[in-house]
Image 1 (cartoon, rainbow, N blue to C red):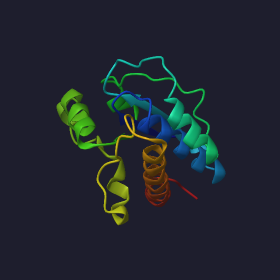
Image 2: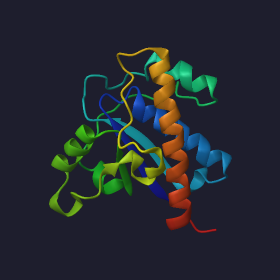
Image 3: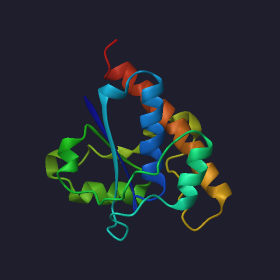
Length: 159
């Protein structure tokens, strides 16, 4: 089983959206049992809360269910437990690398590293924005998750 952890700030917008999208994409491809998928935040201010209403609403319109997810803070053991620790932006990447033991400093990487065709390094934070900002973030997350799934299928999953 391949462990994939998506990380953003409060675990209420980008990372739970990525968790829900990736989980759904893997299930649609018949690969759900091959993954342990989770999300977390670098900030503890939303622990236990559901994703933002706008994130849930925008995701639901595209067939992704985020309603049962709850925010949690990333902890150092996550860096060992998950095979892929994926930061939504460079700030999260710095925080993850700062908490990593020396042997795992290079394990966290940017979520969009497997999607260079997008021409982006970060998923823009929609938190203080409009529904259109959540839609744009979801567009990016969908493309990033599709690229990640294809990358993992090619490098980690057996046929």
